[in-house]
Amino acid sequence: MEPILKGRGLVKRYGKVTALDHCDFDLMPGEILAVIGDNGAGKSSLIKAVSGAVIPDEGEVFLEGKKIHFTSPIQAREAGIETVYQTLAMSPALSIADNMFMGRELRKPGFMGKWLRQLDRAEMERLARDKLTELGLMTIQNINQAVETLSGGQRQGVAVARAAAFGSKVIILDEPTAALGVKESRKVLELIQDVKSRGIPIILISHNMPHVFEVADRIHVHRLGKRLCVINPKDYTMSDAVAFMTGAKEAPAQTEAA
Amino acid sequence: MSSADTTNDGVAKFEQPNRGFLGTVQHLLHVNPALVPLIVLVASIVVFGLLLGSKFFSPFALTLILQQVQIVGIVAAAQSLVILTAGIDLSVGAIAVISSVVMGQFTFRYGLPVEVSIACGLLFGTAIGALNGWLIAAMKLPPFIVTLGMWQIVLAANFLYSSNETIRSQDIAENAAMLQFLGAKFNIGGAVFTVGVLFMVLLVLVLAYVLRHTAWGRHVYAVGDDAEAAELSGVNVKGTIISVYAVAGLICAFAGWALIGRIGSVSPTSGQLLNIESITAVVIGGISLFGGRGSILGTFFGALIVGVFTLGLRLMGADAQWTYLLIGVLIIAAVAVDQWIRKVAA
Image (cartoon, rainbow over all chains, first blue to last red; front, top):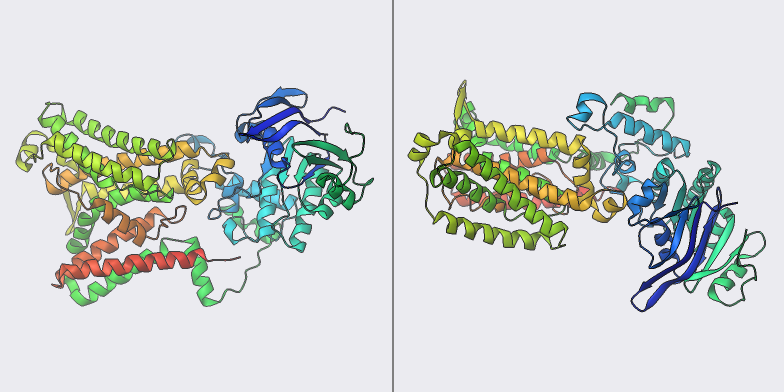
């Protein structure tokens, strides 16, 4: 099977620091791929390199077999790769609907939209509500409430819903459960499963081993700027994974997995 | 709007939390940021009306307030846009004055048709604003510094270019009456309006529409709220900021035109306090200096509050310093309320 998103020989240097050292990366269609690694291993650089947030110094990125060259996250987004950043990238004072359509607003048809540039609020609100309902985020009280009045989990939910609404090919989630409590984490994990069941592949960056082992189909272990190995969570334990990523244990031989 | 009511079919459930009285007030203000200045405005009109009777509570006196605040009101509308992006524009007054000087000098020194001169003045103001925006968005300089510098540059250029000469009111009325167009008065049953007042009201309404109902307006809020988040969501932050300062420059140029109408002459020394007065109106109007919160209607009410206090206290025969003292109190109170509103939780 051809990977939907593929990186080959990616290199990124910041001055004397090599964040990515000829790193490979594969995301298969329909899977949840977790990316784990110690702090400073280069996880973020890897994800930024495939999502257009940084431009790699060397190496190639392929989306559905076609070579791509993103110079900004906006381009990646237009190609169908949505990223949910750890900071969520939402405007706290604006409403849920405003945030979901930020940067890709819908205008009213006809004179009002064409000449007076009027936004089609009713339609945006309807779509936003549909999307949230679809993903089971029914506890959201009001689509017009400001994002800052939501709880952490709800905010994460809205951000994921936004990505799911527009991300046609790949969704990247950066530490989606890091700031959440137990109950809210559970909600978000369910949400991730839900998105996956729609056939959209997900890249999940996380430090939380129980969460990774719960939802991931494969785990990409990142160490010293490159892919150390890819493991199946069914074949290894959490302490194995931690041992691989910290270098306490030799990685399994098969570097080219599934 | 109607689709907001589809909630009763159980698609998305409302659970109205019990907030208590203070909480309800806080929530209401959070949703309608222009409510505080509106209440203050109505209350101050009522109080002065009770104290002064028909001397204050007459169509003439009330519309006099509108005339007195028109310049500040127009400039404050420009200032609102800038402050909503979490910026500040200290050069608004200078832009207004130099635009009026350009309009006057182009007509009288170079003999250009007055319509062309006015267009040149408007363009000039827009260009200075765009330059401000470019320095801030592209060169990443702090708005305070850029506009502080621009204020001095533009004001000095204004004095150098005009040789500090005033163009007299009679000359303008005889040769280029169009320059005083925004000062033209018309009477409706004792209430006196000027074209400038009408322009201010229309400007506020148009900006309120643009900010609420267009993508550009939403982007202005998003950029002021969290520029990085806006950028990641796909907003053209740089373009938004440059356009905001350019539009602010254009509006200030219109204020310069209105200034000619108000004082009759073209004077390079006029409008010196416009920057501080506009910021005052914006703050009293409940727009957050940290950006992203507030509404242009609030600014309009803020400007009117200042006008009501100024006229009311003058009619009462109070020392003018009382006005400044009370305005000072209002500024601090407005920011305190802003901080309180920001504390809303889920």
